[in-house]
Image (cartoon, rainbow, N blue to C red; front, top):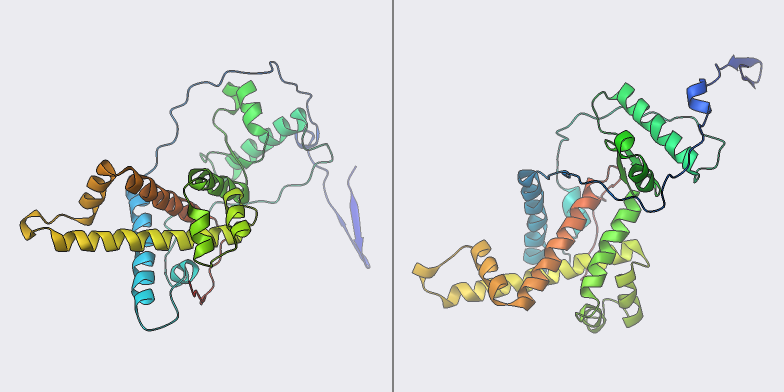
Length: 286
């Protein structure tokens, strides 16, 4: 049967969807708790990561300079990245909008069928590209059928990944006095500062960690400058070498520098999202 849509005096005929798309084969889990198979994982490109991390340090340097000057307007994280001109170094993949299904989305059969459609569509549009699907249940299906879906990458949505990353930071800072420091600095009330740990509000939590990153970097830089003034010129060392030695000698320094690096990784992930748009100007009075 070919559906017909009438708009005014004109009508359009659309071919029916193929059977492989509309027919959902039955499926069920074979075992309750399957054992995950070993995986080599995906290695990150250290050169690309280091370059992007240096861009974050450029923002902190710009923030520190503007914060120490007479002007009352400092450079926020969003404003800094809005001023950067970067061209994508990759080809944009073709992206289609597939028809919707009538079946229940959370059933095993429907999820398995959707993964099959995603694999075949990705292979047709971008041959050789690893299929990526954002949902909650594909991980369970991959454990049940590892040979069939082992080459498919399943992940949470962008917002859920951002919240999960901030919750990791919240668990790390739960007993570190960070909420008390935010309250004493009058950045947020004690209740609001504690809500940052559970990521009750994503944008406000992101803002709080940006403020935390600025504070940690300024304290670390001040300690580095004081150290350089104390040592002799023949013993002078780079900032990275000083950070490495301080991490080995002080557990407190190691923890707070780890927090700074984790915050940078979350900021890098937020910047990597294709839908993120930075404003041209943003005021930051912190």
